[in-house]
Image 1 (spheres, rainbow, N blue to C red):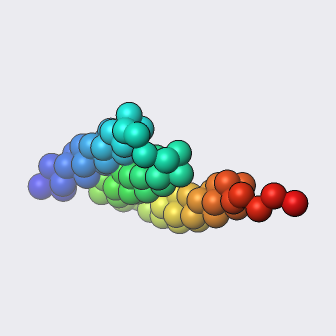
Image 2 (image 1 turned 120 degrees about the horizontal axis):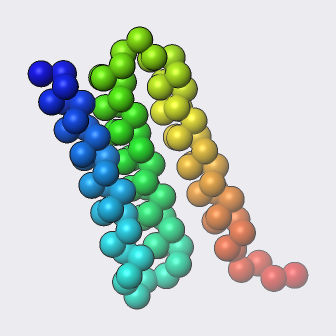
Length: 90
């Protein structure tokens, strides 16, 4: 049962990865494309790590650190991109 749940999490994470690439071919702004890509990539990666956590539970400290790092890194990266894209010309 755990193996099926683990593989399901990994497949759902990969689906999130591909789902985030679909807005890249649209006519929206670059920031919208980056936002949708980063959110789906973060969620997909976290779900994949949860699937790995179910498969190898004795590595939970390292996998928990990976989840926390993904959340912090992508949040900070979003703020940096928003700051860099602001149009405050001096």
